[in-house]
Image (cartoon, rainbow, N blue to C red; front, side, top):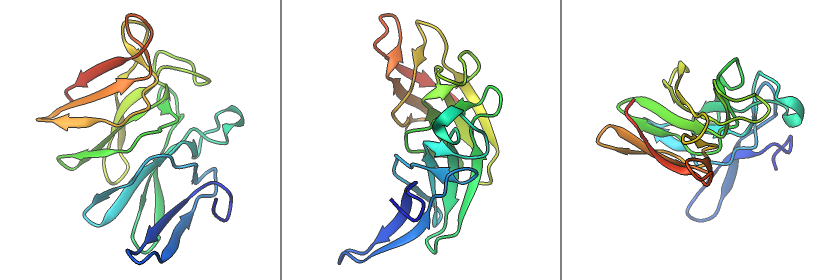
Length: 175
């Protein structure tokens, strides 16, 4: 949907009045947001599956982290797909002590950019991104599609594949 058929951010009142805040346009903007947004001090943050500054085959970009104000001012904070960075974030971000955390479904240090095992990353609200973990070969997980949960400073999550039997993992990471 949206003006470029690449997804939108919208607001809706409790009475049902909808307003499109931003239509994603693909590269270098984001495209195809899957996850929910989080609110950090009145600014919304999210991820897009495609779009961004770096090409990923026919995908038109490897995904982004973006911010958007309630008035609709959108900014790409990070484009995935540069070197051993992850690609294709699917899940919502979480905020822990002022830093945002998330996962990517593919990419990372141990897998090719056309497929891959994925990453866990941190990003500051101003856009400084850091890979905290690159998923690798078994028994490590692969292909995280879910968001993270913070329990007393430890991040927990799941992967779709990988692990001892190849059917995914539950993991914990202390940033």
